[in-house]
Length: 312
Image (tube, rainbow, N blue to C red; front, top):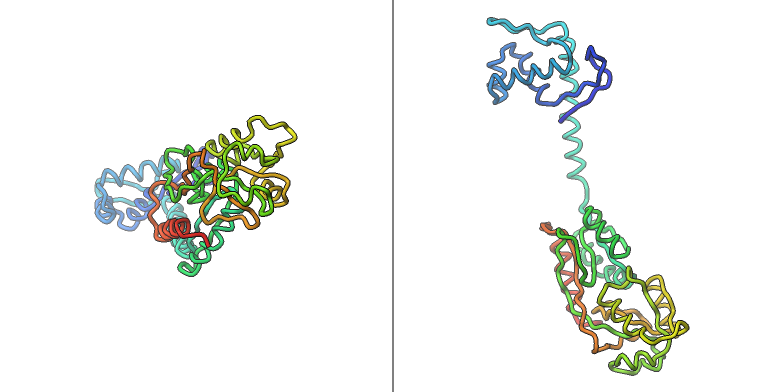
């Protein structure tokens, strides 16, 4: 550990930078007044101890010991510095102990990122079970576009993100939890609501279509939306900033939407009708490699169970 002192004993008037190894060597030599015994106590060689004292004296700009072939004595500057060195080492030990105590007292935290309210609602039930198993756990939920979630994950601000499969940073592991169809979202009273499945042509005849931007829809889903938009007039499109706006307009009967039929992430008041012409999408969780703690492993297990269970 290093300490920088802006106003010290340095005769040049510059900031003094010290480290705990220098201070330990100084205090041990000052106690024994013998470099050999000090080295033995510290588990270092005598030249190593001498080097630490020499660099400390150079930093301070003062001699701390009178050395002869027969004796070692503190100089006046050495006596003066002795009290400071002792106080700094006490403060260092106290700081380490307090930081260790604070770290041990911190409850476990789990940062989770998602992109829409459906995932937030889904996480609510899952986190309820996590709270029962880990009462001290504090969840941190972040809802942001995919690019923002990637940054938060890389920076360690979150530990996991729910996502459709997309290109992820090299350090991020993607774990598939489910395969979900591309679906048409429509209101329960919409003319298409009674269909078991739809073709792309039927979708084009189904009325206005909501349009979500790329930061809301991943590439595969955005491509499906683009195909559904082909041939539509501008007045047959409703631009939406996010899935929440799109779902509200669909529920109100103003439009339909192309979306991912995420398992067990249902939107009340809406029908999800599969579009078999599109390949199913991979849905899962991204997290930094190396995660091994029990809280995180349990979270992954509950995620997998929840997404695999039949919809209630």
